[in-house]
Length: 424
Image (cartoon, rainbow, N blue to C red; front, side, top):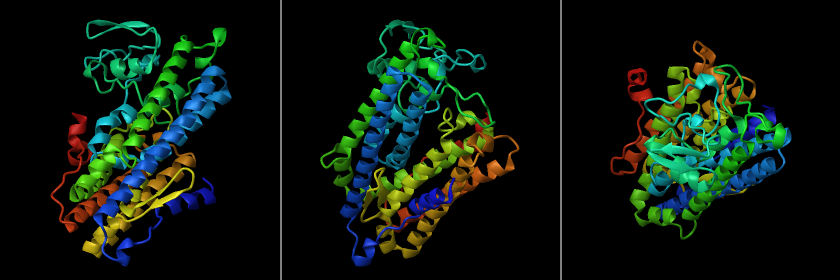
C-alpha cells in the first residue's frame, strides 16, 4: 500500500464533522434526517456499483477472456466498498433486517451452486443439498418435488434455491454467490491465495472447462440481475418518501435507539464475534466473510467505517461527494461531553486497528495467513481489532445511558460470550 493511499484511507477513517451542537440545541429530527440521508447515499452507491458489476458480468458472458474475468472481479470488489458501509443500518431497521439475507448471507454451501473440489465432501445430515450443483443438473428433487431448472432465472434462485429445504447455508443469491461464481473455491487453506476459477469456465464451445459453461453464465447473470433489483428496492426505501425513512421518523426516540442498536449489534456480536473472533478460535479460513476472494480485510474495514460514519453524521460517496449533518455525536455531546469524546476516540481507535489489518493484507500478509494456527502476528492483528470493537461497544452502551433511552440489547456471540460453546 503506498503512502498516499495509506494517508487517504486514514483521513477517511478518522474524518471529523462540524459540530452542530456548538451552534445550539440539537434537533433529533435533524439527526434522524442525516442518518436517513447517509443510508440513501450508501444504498444508492451500492446500487450504482452493482450496476457496474452487472455490465462487467455481461461482458464476461458475451466474450469470455482472462481480462473480462479480472474486470468482473474488480467490479465486485468495488461494489463491496459502499455496501459494507451500509451494514450499520441492520439490526435496528426491520425493513433492512427482513431483506439483508437476500444480498449478503454467508457462509454458504457452494456445492449447491456449482462443482466443488473432492475434498469438499458430499451431502450431510444438516444439508442434503450441499452438493446439489444446480448448474450441472437441469432437474432435481427438492423436498419430494421435482424442480425444473432447465432455465436458470432470478426466480429460481430466489424462490427455490435460496435457503432450500429451510437450510440457511443454502445461499443462492447475493454478493457471496456471485463471489463464488467469479473466484471459485479458495483451496489454499491458511496459505496465501484466493479462488482460482479459470476464465474458461465461461468459454464457448470446446474451450469450455468443467462443463455447463452456458448454464454457469446464466447463473452468474441471474444472480447479478437479482442483486441489482434488490438494491433498487432498498435504495428506494430510504428515499424522501421511502418506507424505511418514514418508519424511522415516526418516533424520534425509537429512531435514535435504532441507530445505536445497529451500531452496537454490528460492533459486538456480528463483527467482533461472528466475523472475526470465531475465525481466530477455529483457525478456519472458511469463517472469512469474503472467503473466495480474500477480500475479508476490506469488508471488516468498511464495516467499521460505516459505524464511524453514522455516529459522526458523515459519508464519503464513491464519487467523492460528502454527506454530513447533525449527528448522534452531537446529541451525546450535549448530554454528556465526556461520553461523546470517549466514544469518538474509541471509534477512531477501531479504525486504526482495522486499517492495520488492511495495510498488512495489501502488503502480502493475507487474512488467510493471519488465521493460521500459531501465527501470533496474525492473531494479534485480528484480536487487536476485536478488542477495539468490544471497547467501542461499551462506549455505545454508555451513549445509550447518556441519552436516557430505554434499555436496548445488542446482538451477542458465543465467540465472545461463551467461547467453549464454539467447540461443542
